[in-house]
Image 1 (cartoon, rainbow, N blue to C red):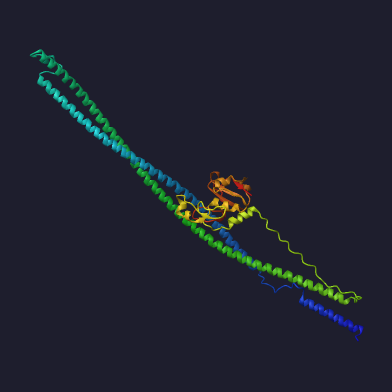
Image 2: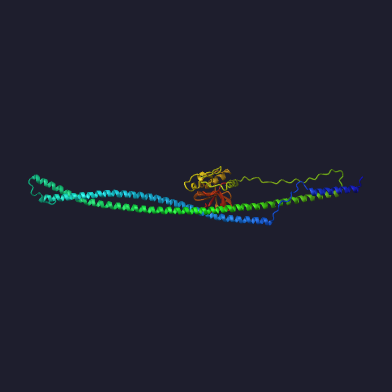
Amino acid sequence: MFTRRAVARIAVSGVLAVVVALATAGPGYAAPPPPPNPSDSEISAGRADADAKAARVGELTGELTQAEARLQELTDDVATKMELANKARVDLETAQAEAAKALADADSAKVEADAAGKAVEDSRRDLDEFAAASYQQGSTIGSISAYFGASSPEDLLARAQLLEAVSGSSLNAMDQIERSRTEKANKDSAARAALDEANRKQTAADEAKKAADSAQAVAVQAQQNQAGQAALIRDSKAGVEAQLAEALGAVDGLTAQRAQYDQWAADKQREDDENARRAAEAAAAAAAPPASNDDDEDYSPAPARPVQVAAPSGDGVETAIARAMAYLGMRYSWGGGNYNGPTVGIRDGGVADSYGDYYSVGFDCSGLMMYAFAGAGVYIPHYSGYQYNSGRKIPLNQAERGDMLFWGPGGGTHVALYLGDGMMIEAPYSGSSVRISPVRYGGIMPYATRLL
């Protein structure tokens, strides 16, 4: 038999055992061992490194923007020089044709001049014959003495007919000599003048062609040099961006470790608090008088409330942006892209062909917009000028994330998707790829177009 005091001691000992057990075992969600806890200085150093690399990326982005703007200027200059060289070639061909015609005219004039010279000689010969005939007749032209000595009426008539014929021939011959000489001189002069003018035009056109070809070659060389500089900057920017991504990853890793440690500490605190509460309840129960035959009630903590997670919004703007962002780094192909994704480009007879766009898969600027907005159920044509007029016009200073930005007359030169904070995603030009870049305000249209 146990005394009441012995029973009490046994009860208290049991309660203490329960308290110890609770303190050591804890609730069912006991926290795991503590994860690494990076120091504030480590996190600050990582952020400083990432900030420095981000600043360098910004500097390189600015340099690249300027380099590519200069490259675009030089590309436009090449196009202009190519047109001028083409004009010079056309002018030279025209001048050569005129020179050939002038030479042919000169040859024709020489033939006619030679004929006129022969006519002069023939006229002179006729005149000489007339003079000789007049001398042999013993009379001058039209002299009445030529009728004297006629032996018969028939002889008199014959002499009259002869004098009349010879007189008319002599006058006609002298007139013909003057006309032939004048005609020969005029034709010779005109032929020489036409040939001189044609040769002058051909010489000028040939010099213009040489100058235009030289200017085109200089412009192409400048464009190639600038393209090389832009490529170097682009490579440097890609390298720093990779370093930035690595630094951001390191910061994210440290931040995640800190967040895990904070979560562990919070769980541990809740565990300690719960153990203390249950120990206090157990101690209080031990100190209280025993209940009269009442069934003990089991302790059951209140269930935790589930965390509410917001469902995806399904925002069309973000869908369009996500679709465009999914193709960062995809090569530019002129004429490439449709509602379903990148496609093979088409020939343009110039720059795009030199980069092989017509046999390469990719996007051009308007093709990227087609694909991006098709994901949100908006289908726009494959031409930036039409895309400019496909939605609501928004003043440029009120543009929001998801609006389209345009360049050139009627928006027909280029289009990009605005991301906010002065940044955009675009497929810029042959030889480049889909990228994020700062908004370029040179030549930009004063209105953005909003589709969603």
